[in-house]
Amino acid sequence: MFDLCIKNGLVIRAEGCFRAHIYVKDGVICAFSQGDTTLEANTVINAAGKYIFPGFVDPHTHLNDPGLTNSEDFYTGTCSAAAGGITTCLEHPITIPLPSTYETLKQKKEICQSKAVTDFALFGAAVPDNIDQIDSMTELGAVAFKAFLTVSPDMPQSKEPDIIAHLENLKGKGPVMPIHCEDQSICEASTAAMRKAGKVSPADYYNGRPEVAEAVAINRMAYLAQYTGGKMHIVHCSIPQGVDIVEEHKKKGVDITVETCPHFLVFDHSIMEKEGIFAICNPPIRDRETVEELWKRVLDNKVDFIGSDHAAYTVEEKEAGLEDCFNTPAGLTGIQTGFIAFFSEGVMHRGMSLEQFAAMTSTNTAKRYGVYPKKGDIAIGADADFVIIDPRESWTVKEEDLFYMCPWSPYIGMNIDGKIEKTIVRGTVVYEDGRINVEPGFGKFVKRINND
Ligand SMILES: [Zn+2]
Image (cartoon, rainbow, N blue to C red):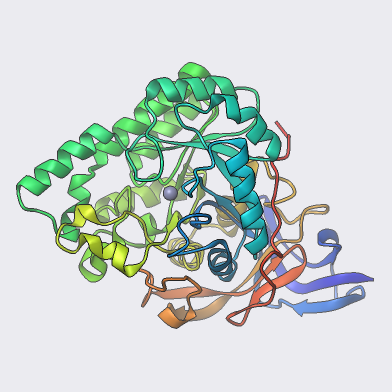
């Protein structure tokens, strides 16, 4: 007797689609069958006419726990994730205390574990003075060590020598080094020029963090990946040139990957008129021409995966930029709507294949961060993580449906084709019909699997 059978759906893997009934026991996928009859199971879900994707793996979450929980915590954040089809959150290191040591990462892991609704993995911080902590943090299960080239309030800036030292230290050990790529000196000069000219409205923000700042930084980092032979990932790339630089380096055999975010694809600069400071993020949302060029790279399979880069602040915090947009904390909310908005625009409107969608939202991500094949696939032996989507349903994002602690979002009012019907983590329905069905702590910590 199986615990769960999901019958009659279209099963989508990065490698192909097939019609099948899926069977789950003890949280793991253990059989498929085809035909008119199904094997016995305690719970049966009829997915006729629906798509069954591997649960989304979000490689870029900032759920603010511990230390910044006035605007989001690991419970509200993972509830929002579950409602957005995400079954595994890869949580970034901007929290207080900074997870740059074994002790602080362990503390963060325990706090997240007590509140998680979805499964999760953790990134440690790669900072100038913590090389000696990396091995013990890897042992604890960290899947990556992230560095920032920019100055930000809660994370020390890294410079080239720090990046080289970390890449060389990590070589052959498995974890990836994701990097926030914007050149600090170009951003500072551009922001100062905008302020001097009195151009400080939200529509001016992107000129204070121009595309060249991102392109220069990605170029330098790609070279360092080549130079060291290290394993690098470019987070939240907003520009086509960034994807092209990564592509050139991949062709040379450099171990480098790139992600973009739904908000760089489903919005363009005109969103600033409607949303103002609430659409400000780093790097910024670009103009329509850049967005279209980025879509070309996505549809050409040159972007490895997408990540929400969900980063919540209170309304009061965001309003620090009302007089001068450059004073607003950079970040927007989107973990609940970003992946399905990407489905709507990519699959329903731009002809992206279902397989590519599965690869970019789950399989490629799980592989890169070393949690595959436990996560990221619908296959025998994998965790029974699924998102069931009804492609025939259209809906509008409403504030009251959001699980965010601070329910503002640039996505409110957006019409989306395709609806998340159920999110299933290890065989348990965690989200359906606008409700979360599990208690805090249901989600489990996922360690890096040593598979490379
Ligand atoms: Zn981020």
